Length: 168
Image (cartoon, rainbow, N blue to C red; front, side, top):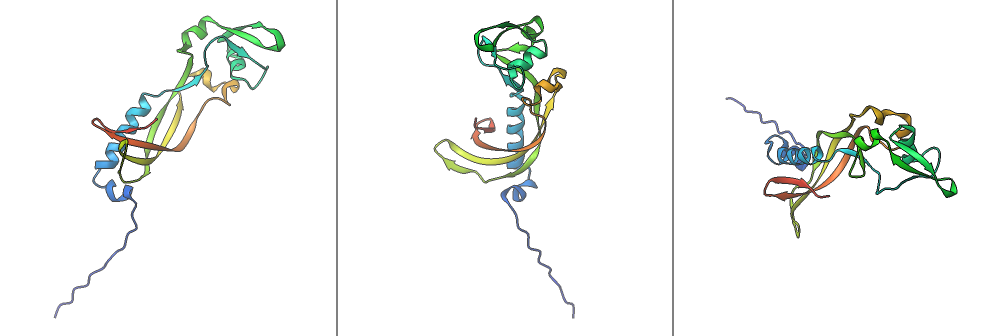
């Protein structure tokens, strides 16, 4: 007489681990996040001119002065109006100073899609790396203002005809 032994293995799974093997939903989320991140460079938002420096340290506008991206004109109250230098004019576009890109490292977890008034939505936790591509952004004056390193961010996403896209 032969005996058959069946071994049952229990697995606790999240939606991400249940669907990871099929590549479907997780792959679609990864694709949508990747496209959105490529379209969103890392930038310092400068606001509309005139740019005003309020102190000698710890101020983004002062960092622009220290880096040579602007020249200053003293104003009342100890502030400085900054006029972009030739270098600054080349780098400052649409009142932004871009310095890097956000790279997707992977999808850590996500919820299953839910029907909402916006359409089918889900939440995803994604691991990203902030890559500094501009040498000037590594200067000490900019350290408090630039993002670098790795982080996990949460994104709400909506399903579009072109796939899953983050809601901003």
